Image (cartoon, rainbow, N blue to C red; front, side, top):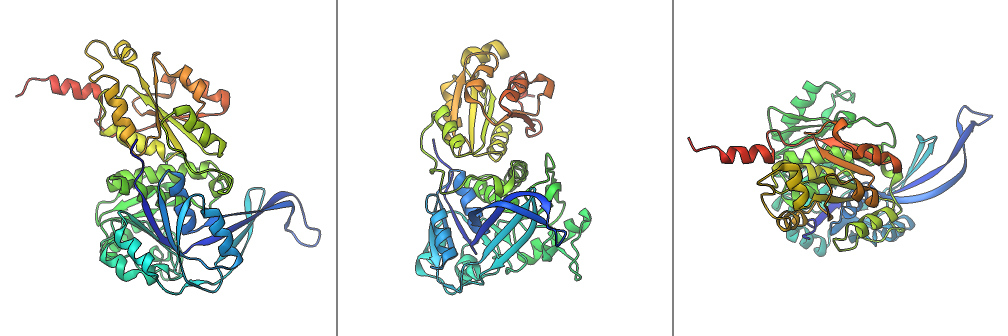
Length: 452
């Protein structure tokens, strides 16, 4: 199987530290929760989290960031080592560290320390930008992007995730992903604009101001607004979750940049990124990620059960999609890309030739099973393919036990016999829309019509 395209991430790395425990009482001397038996957990933060998430998608990821030899820098290197190749830039000061204190899954306080900034660019970093097939910049205003701005301008990145304290993206960037609450989208008094029309006008203005091909304004629970300069496209979130708010922007940027690197259209990448960010929050956000140092890197191979077990052992999310796929079309590909963004691996369950014939009738399958299986294995978003001979994949799903089961939107919830089966292991069946008008049966009927 051809794997996902490699990605070079450029940005200002952070170390996130979480002090989480039980909060069952208030302090006697102040109306604040007392956090008992708290543990100390570290994880990559900021652009380092973006790079880590892209690596968990199975990508070969290199991160260019200012990282020194202070304790926080050494800890971040240790966490990234199994997953991400790090090209460190010299750092003045200590690596920024953010310590979060949650109580009852809600933030109580955040303690920041470390004011390190990238001091200079190395020749290895400059060469990596020049030679990389795909570049994602996450600029938090601590010098990394500025030190490499000349080489980034000469070879505009695929995606740029701006921060209020960062500079403008390089002209010619294919997709810029500011948050609506960022300062660039706020009036002079700093109050975020919540009006959709205002966000659309701001996005169009940013396309022109930044000379970007497209701007996707992330709207938190409302999804994202994609603008090419006029007539924006609203990509809504399929669900609203209230939980850990740390990391969905990084998940959005990692998914969008990765899919652009794989050859997806900007609209397809943004749709999948919205779905991935929504699912990320629903699964518990950054706080639910497995420890980077406890999970081995993804293993090669196409055995669906081995792939699922590896991801499950690393506390990741297994996604399964299915169908006949004897005539693979753009609707299928869009659905599979979106499905992959909902978890850490995607297993595609494919009907055998006999099963397709029973379901679709004479003349089907259009192509023998070996053809769609080979095409599916060649898609970057597909981790493994499993074939079943029954009319429905219930027996296969019972053995695979995915966390999420995805079907195309031409089904209704009542048409999913496996939905109740998923409940046995607390899995969830979801429907995702196909591209409008894409249907194998309809395409065959049009092909059979006499030429007029």
